[in-house]
Image 1 (cartoon, rainbow, N blue to C red):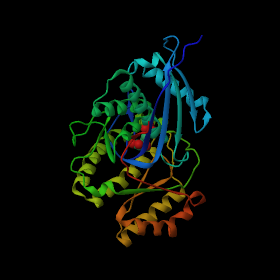
Image 2: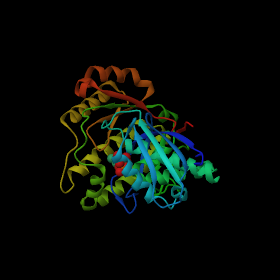
Image 3: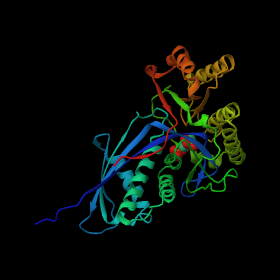
Image 4: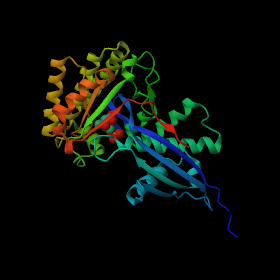
Length: 352
Ligand code: PMV
């Protein structure tokens, strides 16, 4: 007679994030060349469930199945198997358990929302939850999230910033003695409340998969002649941005945010080989946003990820004016008129 399997389950929902000061350039095992700061998003999230039970025999092979958005996905399954295999030292239970992983995103692909950030942070949180439930370790909340951030970083650098509400910082920086290259930290103390009300409306200028991956982009920073001064600048920007958020100085904040976005793309254009991810409509939208801000005196700023889509950042109080502006001037620049409306959020949630 076969033994009855005892199956347990954990589910976490974790958001994506958008960098304000960009992480671009890395070394070693996903360690950043400079500090970065991000807004945690709210509506763009991944929900991941892991059902698990003890394998018949303990073995170093990772035993798992992976269902993405309702379908078996061998490519993702292989990636996750490799990743889990690389982090076995942090979770010894991986040798003992079979995992059935189910994952889905609340947002579509190739829209300028980092699915790697939400998915890797959701997976890391589930793994930490299993450790907590099975071993009684990680009962301390700070320790729990720090480990989740550390593990998420190993999966996809910027994912480490997704485990905290509203604002997170990753990478050593003189603005905070607790900042680390190994995990992100929440940025809370003294931040002006207006930054908790920020909206992020994403103009989908293109929904085509980008031609150069972030992985390749990071690697190209190694030969970039501007790399050294860039890392210094980013660390200064991180300090200045945090200060601007403490002062409630949206203008100073916005100047840094836009400079960061344009610098990221300038670095791509100055790589060997050089490449351009912005599209004509990206530039048209940027010009319109800057003109609207100057003429209407509305604190609306933009940032870009490593792609052509535009994240429009603005405080809630100017929402109606910005919505009207988007409808009138920007929707026509977007693929099928698509704009995704998100906002800063309260961070991951344990669902079950
Ligand atoms: O975490 P990665 O390897 O996907 O790199 C993210 C790079 C940017 O999104 C461009 C910047 C950032 O800090 O998120």
